[in-house]
Image (tube, rainbow, N blue to C red; front, side):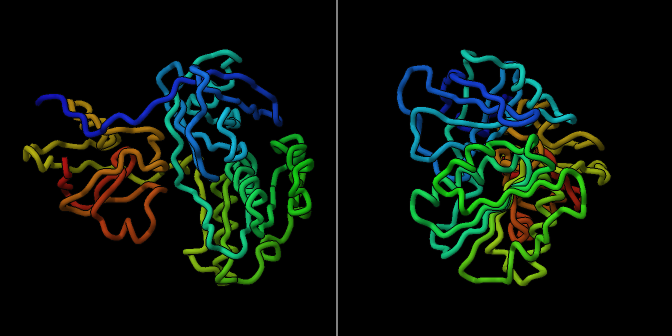
Length: 326
């Protein structure tokens, strides 16, 4: 079968690391500027970029500088103990290193028609939330920011927050690992308000706690927004199934423990992948027949229920066969 590309290459940008700073324990920030000295593409609060690392890995990082800035992009990276290689590679880079990045994409945008914004960040989740605060402060938006971390030493950009024009809207919560010192999340969120929107980013357990507390208070799902950095470990069985390529009728076996992307790659069909965890939506593929077993964090519940698309990097099949629009 001839090699097929299902992806028209996105615009890539050559950048140089112009600054690296220690922002907290195990957290470094990186300033990226265009290698040709030209302004970078504009971006909106909540946007992220794909960073192509020298070893071939591609990782997504939220932009955390002011959206009005065009001379640099700033990202921050937590060196994770269970890293799949991305954070370790980033922490090994030096100032002056040249990288390739994508143009910014935004899967976590501000709802500008909201009357009030509640921003909640846990740990490294402060990165897109900080950018949102910068934007809302600049436009005169009504917002409050709550930042949770085990300690001040493990919280990034604390001094920047304390010195910011919106410092009076920032609330820092450090429990030093003592449950008795943790704030009442429900009290911080408050009763449901149809004119308010809540945005949360951080570890999966933290986000589920925040979102669950909001739902218990009557907040509508349409007013709740989250950004995932990584997927939770997937312990579900990965039994085998078939996929059929609609263009040729070819049927391929997807064995247990092997992804659809890997099977397609084996016969020369390239699907664009980035996070490989069902977070970014880069590999989203149309499903013409069959029922996917959705294991992504990108599609909404309604989009998953439609069963007309899935993420082949991680999702599988409930039916014996999926017919793909390939």
